[in-house]
Length: 346
Length: 142
Image (cartoon, rainbow over all chains, first blue to last red; front, side, top):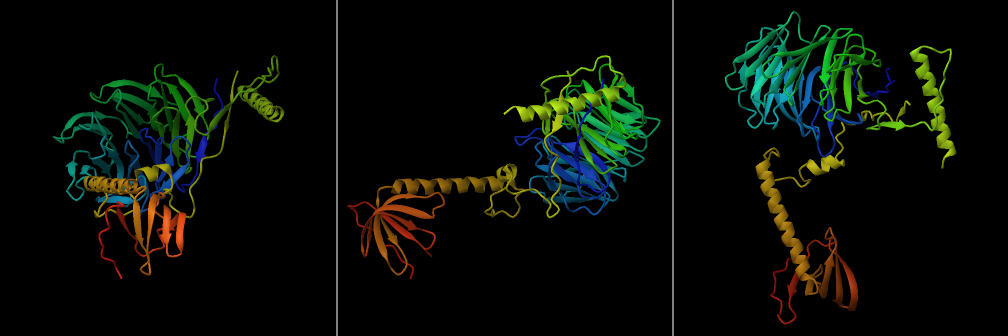
């Protein structure tokens, strides 16, 4: 039975949020960057959603954003034909990498020494951040705009998804295609999980899981609506997905069963990602907001605090029979008990 | 039974007046280069900055050791208007703004304990010497 969930709404963006990424876990917690069509990507504290800063400099919609593991650097891809690298501590722009068309995707290597970019010019580029003035290595082959390009297999290979309805695996050194997947429709999103080498791909209403090394399919799951993005929990027990119907869906990865669905956004969900500790997941929507959702609803974490009612009132044999009404009655009683407890106990 | 989850507060939104990245946050203070500008042009050259930091640390350490070594030694302060006073050096405060001294020999008498302000001087010279050894004349700036 579904628990009601109170997401944390992060406001600030004025246009649709199209991409988001978490950093790794750092001594200062973990961080979240959001890409927005308003051209102003924002950095937030990952567990609370508190705004830390806005990266100012792009002159067009920002389509992709990423952080390095330590959250010391950020990279963004924009419609102004540039990818930018930022100092994620000071917010200063460090590097601008000019491209010949809209840039859609950016990704750091594990050691943050190289940046991968991909976009509408159909070329994957590798920039050495220690030698930024040097010409990037180019990987050609895609016949349509690249949506996402990610490092994989310990940064020795590259996975790319494009509007040509293919996902390709490339060798970094030879720049040759190692393997290719073809679909009937464009892939809407791609997520790579290094631990376990899992690739999560979404297209149409399907969320598909592949082995990232062999590109062998592990399983596919169909959702009730067209899905724009999905994310697998670090422990690989759940995955979440969101899309056209504005809802967030939570599925059991093992059984493929739909466990919960949550309403909250006022527009299609464009991106969803689990936090590095798996305690929450963030979603970005056409409505211009980011929402943080608890993985285990009812747990005290971040800004969520679990309140245990002192007593529970059961409404056995009640004429109220619908799930919605039952849980709203329970919520009302719980709130009453919590406020009475506060007043009566010192 | 079911638990209730409340939200302590809403996530903080952007500051309308600035772009954020609070320089007083723990992370900024810990990860950013020192406020004293490095002599290297670009801070991204982490090797050079690292070497400079090591040099700064070494100099700071020897400065602090000097202060420790001066404790309880006879010290001569050269102040403005060609005033020179002797005292027994006690300690300096953390920002080297004040010196604590004992037996301060002033033109108007001996102060048992005194605090000398260091910052309000254009230049402060101190000569440290053992009571048995006379001080070497240092060139003074007039």
